[in-house]
Length: 56
Image (cartoon, rainbow, N blue to C red; front, side, top):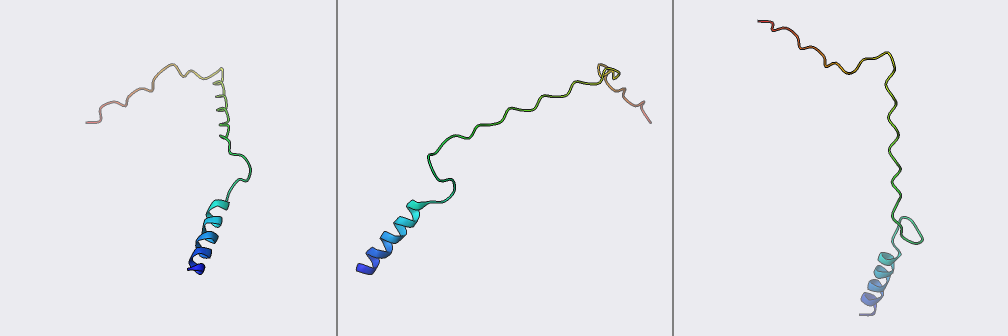
């Protein structure tokens, strides 16, 4: 009986000790998304690519 109690106490202490970050809990800050680079001035991206002609 005493061995069972000691094992349960030791197991509980191990579970409560935990692992990972020590100290107070906090919500991590999510970094802001990087800004998209502006397209080069010589490129014309306003036109859709033309569809290939029917090859039948």
